[in-house]
Length: 231
Image (cartoon, rainbow, N blue to C red; front, side, top):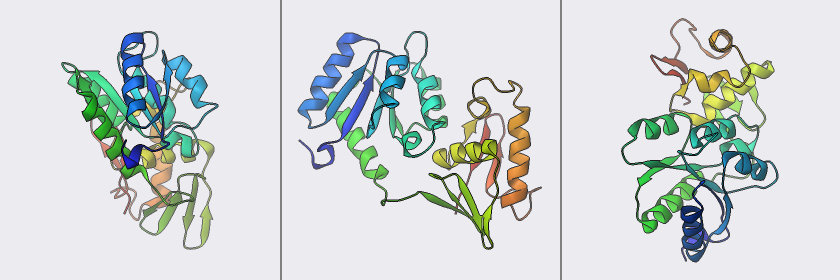
């Protein structure tokens, strides 16, 4: 058992019963508490009622894949949306690894893999994820953004954000400094063209950028989407 693993609760999401059970057994022997989910739908139900320290998510699953689940998780409010994610992907699908990292996954592991490497990667992610008690705040020049509360503050006090602006800034802050795909920022049931996201980005730049025409903090990543670059 490693010191990092003690009492940490993991959620393993994989539709393959054999692989899921093997992972659960190995991770439990390594000192973790482990819960399994056979689908993204089952994982969502668990995540809405329980807190986990980290998710191990297979990309290739029927109906809803692991990338979609990661996108949904990162869009959640509060500390739940910042839960670390390690994605499992087929060795010959590098696009899945790139997409997962862009959506906010903390690491990936290509199949087949050595179980010991999985444990070491999980331990490394958990060490990085340790944060002081309280809200996570990112600095943006003269401004600060409280990720937990979705509050933007300046030298003269709070700056009003619409619900959509706060949600967008939070998604970007959780993934920072990595870019987030425009499709992931659009969200379910929203304008598929992404025009609403572009409008929100323009408004946010007016609030946080010294020169909105030449953004320093909320950058456009050509061909991908947007990225937040805190101090």
